[in-house]
Length: 409
Image (cartoon, rainbow, N blue to C red):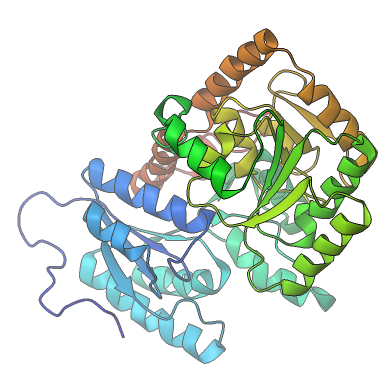
């Protein structure tokens, strides 16, 4: 059942009608998908549109409330076929009640229900393809994943993902729109991080004064490359550095124990610190000398890379996925082959050797690069532009469709 009150006003019977967009996703707990949903929901309100979000709920619903966005609680997190089928009718009711023009699906299970509901209701159907998704045996998983390519328009969060959709799912390039994820520069702004915040984190993590800090932010899971970084630090051979592995293991205690064991075997107990989650990442970036993204699997976007550059920090990232779009190699950061500790060690050595003047110059270039390409405002404006295409009834071929790897978004 929906959490909406029976007296909630639906489609206005008089006056000028506003465009209505409904975003659907499993829940609002944490993550890049959820953050993008909330950012776009707020931008819709600012643009004078009616903004709706349907999910199974979560603590981030409070942010929608503050933005004046209606949240409708439905069991969209469920992959149970019976629940997914029932969600078709539930979403049809929401579409009819609020006069929804565009249904924007951001995850696979909700997308299956939303696609049928939109088709039956005559609403436009749009998807955002957020990752490469796992491929199962006999192509069954691919068939399940393929719903994310079935929108009238399909937003890809990077050129890498746009290419992936064409190769794996034969998605028509005409309907692909590349909209990079965006970060909030009112938060990720070096000028807004006080020295007190930086000192508090340094004390909490017991970092000694004068030691360069290397940080790998990201949940503790094997493909994020924490083991690769540890091996690289062993090859680097420096005792005057500290390394922070920032992120939750999300219950993967066996992997955390494996990392601790590897650190001990490599003699890096005093150098590598597994510090868990951090609720002040801007301050964490500011006390860091080099930000690392060592993912062994391709990143669909790579938010850490962009956040680090926004804070004026040199980044070292593996050259797979979208990294080549998000780093100016040799200028704002360095790209290295994936799963290659020796190459990573060499890049870390070079990054730590950058002098003050060059570091300042690179920081200015990095922050401007992010401002020009990866802001929340750009992401929202481009997403609303895709909504406007659909509502105007423009054929996919008349828009700015995907034209290849070097195309501009």
